[in-house]
Image (tube, rainbow, N blue to C red; front, side, top):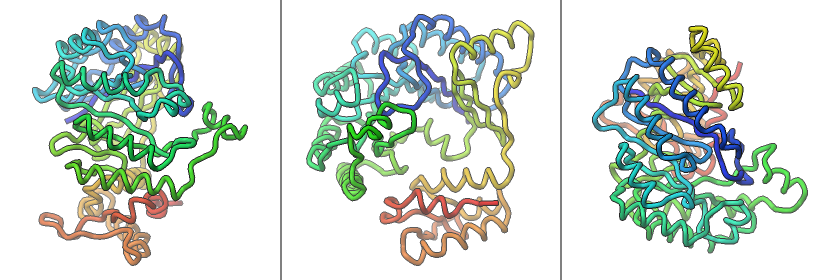
Amino acid sequence: MAGIYIHIPFCKQRCIYCDFYSTTNQEKENRYIQAVCTELQLRRSTLSDSIHTIYIGGGTPSLLHPDSIARLRASIGQNYQVTSDLEFTVEANPDDISAEWLETMSRIGVNRISMGVQTFHDGHLKLLRRRHNREKAIEAVHLCQAKGFRNISIDLIYGLPGQTLEEWKADVAQAIALNVQHISAYALIYEENTALWRMREQNKVQEADEELSLNMFEHLIKELENNGFEHYEISNFGLPGFHSRHNSSYWNDIPYLGCGASAHSFIGEERMYNTANIDQYIEDINRCEEQDLPYKEMCHCETLNRYEHYNDRIITGLRTAAGLDLDRLEKDFGQELKDYCLKMAEPYLKEHTLQITREKGYPQGVLKLTRRGLFLSDGIMSDLLWVD
C-alpha cells in the first residue's frame, strides 16, 4: 500500500495562523497543474505498491477549476496502480462548495471531503480571516450530505484569542450536531513569520491560557467519545470505520509520494522535499522533462539513519491510540534503542502518563500515552528521542 499527496498552493487570502506554502496568484493554475501531472509521470517508478489513498490538500484545492482536479486524478490513474477501495480526499473551504462542484468531485471518484471550518463563531472567523461564516459552514456540510457524501471531515481550532470555554463547547456541540464522520481539532499555534505571530508581538492579541486550552481539549475528548467517536490520534477523532486512512499512512511508516511545490515524500528510508516556490517548482519539473533528468535532480533528498528513523517512529507511534509495538521497535531498530526507549519512559510509566499494555500478539507489549499523558504528549515524546 502507498499514498499520494498533492499540494495545491493557491488561496484567495492567507489566514493569520497559516505557515504552509501558499500564493494568492491563481493565474498560474494551468501551468502548475501541468507541472504536477508531469511530476507524477516522472516519478511513476518510485512506488511499486498500489495506491490506496489520494489526498489533495493545500492551500485551498476547492479554488481550482474542477477540471484541474479531474486532470490530476487522470494522471494518477495513467501512471499508478490504484486499489478498488481507494480513499480519495479533497480539502475544501466551505465558501467554495456548490452543488455543481460536488457533482464533479463525485463523478471523478472523490469520496471524502475535508472541510476547514475552524470555528462556528463569526467573530473568531473574522479574526482568523476566513472567507466563510457560521451559516455557510453549516450549509456546506448539509450540501455535501445531500449530494451523497458519507465521509465528511471538519477541522476545528481551539485556544483562539479571546475564545471562552463556553464558546468552544458550542463549537463542539455544533460539530457533533452536523453528523459528520470525522473531526480534527488542533490547538492554535503561533508560528513564526505568520500574521498571528506579529499580532501577538504587537500585543494586538493574547495567547490563550494553558489551563484554558487543556480544559478545552479535555472537553473535546469527553464529548466526542460520548458521541461514538474514536480518539485514534492526538488531534483526530473518527466514527468506527472512518479514520483517515491517508493520515494514518504518515503515522504507520506507509510510503507516500508528495507532489507539487513544498510537498514531502517518504519512501523506504528516504525523505524528499520539493522547493517551496511555485515558479522554481515549475521550472525544475520542466527542466527534468526536457533534459530527461532524474527527479532527484530537482528535489532535496536525505536518507534517514537508524537513529533518525527511530525518532520518527517515537513521534508518530505515540501520537496514535495504537501506540508503539515494542517487539516491532526492537526488530526494526535493535535492542539498544528499544532499551533506551524504555529507560527514558520509566519516569512517565511511574507517574502513569505512559503505560505498557499487554495485548494478544504483542509479547513485549505496547507503549502508549495514558489519558493524562495526552495533555503532556510533546514533552514526553521529546524525552524519548535519541540525542547524540
